[in-house]
Length: 419
Image (tube, rainbow, N blue to C red; front, side):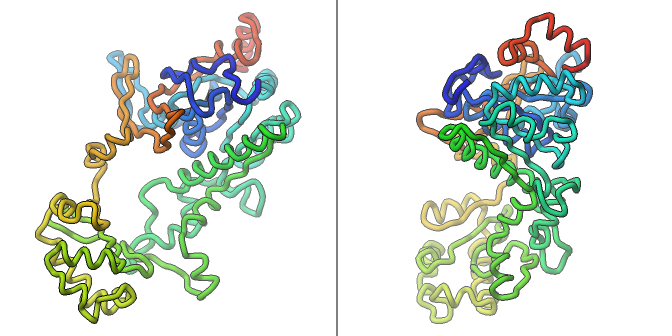
């Protein structure tokens, strides 16, 4: 199989995706929970044929994560699992068996990408690590997502998202200065590693397409989190400053934070001279744009001036107005955004216009609404409405199409516990 060849499974994806920028790229997904499954899901949304491989005795335990869809029969299906595993085929292989190892090698010969998110060394211990699999397919792109990467003193440590937030520096910077540090309120260690894994995978695919040579894409959650710390590293290496929690404030830009209003909070970022002058006009105080104490951005950045003059002024502008009223006042002129909860986000007209909450009908379970794809391509649009597979749902189809196995061989492998 070559790049851009439709392949025997392309166009048969759960959910009906038949076109896409990655059509014909075959991805073996040996991952679980989020960081790995989200990576392969993004590739699937772009048109890749993604085969989710699970241990028949111990499938992805995210299948048990809430919230769950419930059928009339009482059967349940995880909405969490469905969101991160849409558009995938389902196959079971027990890699601890000889038959399972040989089967994976057969599939690797027909694949372009393999994604795994085990601790470094786990796949080697199973006898199907990168050095073994590259012998089966020299152009294989092998994407490995782990807590600390494939080398270094921490490489074998178990890790979760919080491990990356802790050791990548982000946790120490988040929260309020008079309280203990707080984790970022989502799994940013997993999600950032996912995005870098997709970038690395696509770059390696490009190289393999040109040269016929694959490579390992080594992604660390700790590395990924560190890269999200903005100016923290250079603040320390240049000025010797160790950034700590700042609450909702920016390290130096002011005004640029959360402010209370009548029915909640808004973000206001009118810190440049242009935006400040417009804000003064819109809120009925045009003369303040020429006030010699706060008429330049540099003066407004001064902490003492900001606390004494600027912050109280913004509180007076905002406190008696609702989020909607404030957004209507500034319109398209000044950066001001309502701080919305997820219920408000799901109902947001901009989210709807961008197709970022999609409806998917699961047979027997009903409708599932989940986030869509932020990648918008004009000629080969993404398809975020595919279904996630049941455990091993497409095993026979995949093994016939990609491993050239007949029914007797498939039956034998199932009896042996290899699939």
